[in-house]
Length: 254
Ligand code: BV8
Image (cartoon, rainbow, N blue to C red; front, side, top):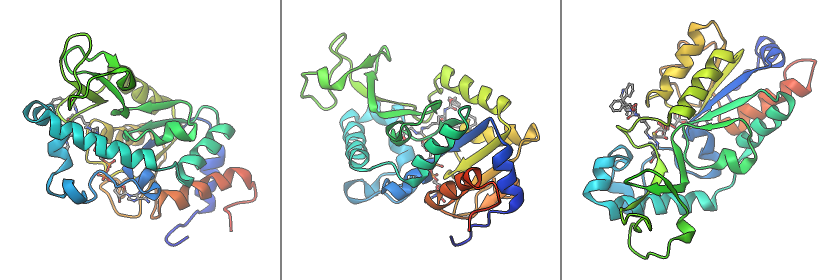
């Protein structure tokens, strides 16, 4: 466990916590083989910046290009499996039923791992909606071969049900995330560069309440200097070790 220092104090904090809040970013899915949001894109997509494609402007300008990008990402995710980090959070939740996972990810891997109390702040690659009335659509039910398909109700382009840059977050999910910050007695921030708002404001809100914040990230982020603990490790290593504190009343796992 290179760079992973689970102190007695941290293990004790984990054992004592009853209302844990876990904020995850694309780093939690890295060990499932899903490239993080800022990993260099590969192949056909190498010349595009994700932030430039994940916008209403890009979709309006070239709906077919944006649609194909999302279909490429969706097939990447379909081939991926939840990893030990996703599974550790499911185990943690079985031992602490009030644990809430707020994810910025749209890959659906927390859902596929069986996570309950899950808040998907930025939507999901496997959900679709009408680009005009924003109402949900079942892609499998669409008989339209256009790229992107047309909404069967109004003919507008179908789009992925994700939050693009410049779009407001779903209010119910944002309210659930804020409520979780106000209730939590321990916060983990796992696998996020903390560059995207308003999600990036959540750890500071917990610190402002005097709640311990544990960052899990192999690389330094702006949060590392203000976090209570920084576990410089991969999520797939650190999260099972943290859950090990719950099983082993004697102290940190060997
Ligand atoms: C909005 C869905 C109101 C689409 C995404 C202040 C307040 C409010 C808004 C703003 C603000 N300042 C700027 C804004 C605008 C903007 C924003 O934040 N821009 C940034 C770039 C500065 N925010 C918005 O537009 C939001 N909307 O606020 O509405 C509004 C409206 C109009 C005008 C103003 C305000 C909407 C944001 C949502 C965008 N949609 N996703 C899609 O995916 O296609 S965001 C997308 O990027 C992801 O969902 C994710 O949230 C984010 C990527 O971040 P990370 O997950 O952190 O990924 P990243 O690659 O950066 O980092 C990975 C990390 O993992 C790294 O640190 C790495 O070290 C680590 N790692 C790697 N391997 C591992 C690991 N960690 C652990 N284990 C490993 N093995």
